[in-house]
Image 1 (cartoon, rainbow, N blue to C red):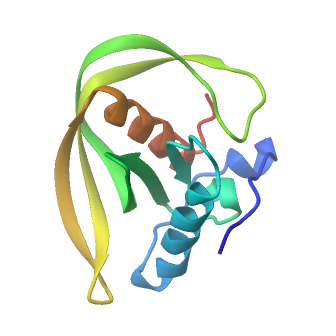
Image 2 (cartoon, rainbow, N blue to C red):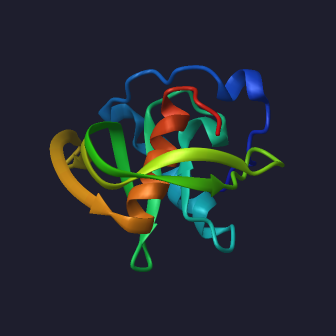
Length: 138
């Protein structure tokens, strides 16, 4: 279901609760909402009103969902200026060009562990979304 984008900074500043397999609907809502917003690169569950640690990001024209993502390694810091659908102003932030993320995917009704490396733009947007799960607003 397409959801409205949350702009309440108090809500967005809360640390997300761990997601479970019962939160599959949150993942689908993220996919649906991203598809409704032209140029949307990533979304976190708190941006659509959920308190769960779920993010979605676009890579090569396809939207991917991560449950309980955590940045486990990072290299090559660089300064960035980012926009956010939940905020009006742009924000300067430090990002990393190379990252490794541990996360879970929903498969056969269960969460399964994964780890993957990302670089460049994809790494940047994933870091942005993971920040949302930690209650960090850029």
